[in-house]
Length: 215
Image (cartoon, rainbow, N blue to C red; front, top):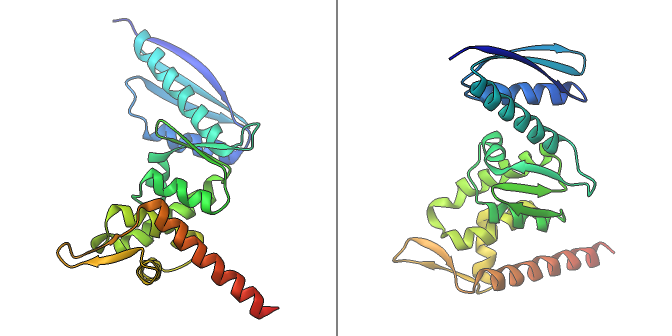
């Protein structure tokens, strides 16, 4: 099949966007050959291959540019759009989307989910930090907890800056969790929503008590 060539121009706002775009571009496994020439806020991309290869490559290049823009710059609502897989890879973490969502809500952030994407008010660097903290907390309790109790413990541990083992012990003291000898795991006695409500009420009560002492 005849080979062809096409040049497209990608406009970027700053060096940060340019670097992020180039990093994403290098991850792509493309059938066409590409050559990138950068000049100020423009990236000229020379694409060579068959017509079908060029068409598919240009589609994917524009797709990642849209993804990078949505990640770095908020929309009219002040929200950023991230791919969950990209976030977890960047943070070297392996936590579920429900845990991410609950943590962001406890931190007072706006958050929505849509087909593997996370839409939130938290900027990328801060979100990577949150995901990293969740990953660290998970590594401490993953072997001796069930999935359900982790969905309560991890968001609270990160949002309130507590050790996850301490949060687990609080749940036990409140009668919302217990140790199952036959499973060698801690698990909830209440459902997730009830356990979270009991835990948050307890922590907020402690915060109010601390403020009273300081006053």
